[in-house]
Length: 149
Image 1 (cartoon, helix red, strand yellow):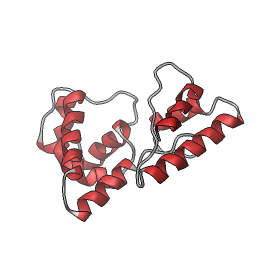
Image 2 (cartoon, one colour; image 1 turned 90 degrees about the vertical axis):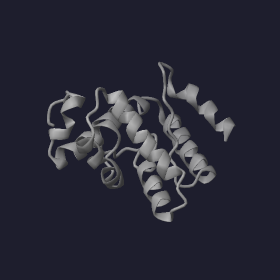
Image 3 (cartoon, rainbow, N blue to C red; image 1 turned 30 degrees about the horizontal axis):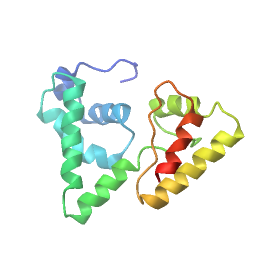
């Protein structure tokens, strides 16, 4: 899995467990509870597309979200918290490193704004991370999100 290209989704069932876990890390964030939840799914079911795979994992996550089990709630919180805070300097995944590099190109006030948004969001929604998906805009346009909290 050293190359940047993903294996064909129809071939995932033949991958060793460690490679299926590494694939999940590339698609999402490195996270042991996500491995526990989904690595076996990649062996048990053949997927025609990555969209189909992601939809199946979404269903697994929704099952955790709708569960009354404390263990399921803790697993879901760990999975959701695997995403690094915006502006965080140390991140594990290549995808997040690239995203963070785009966020960290502003001045020092941008970094302070990210830190403030992270704290505000995490106080409002304990156990979750503030995540925005920019679509061509700059980070400063995203700071309006604070008004929604």
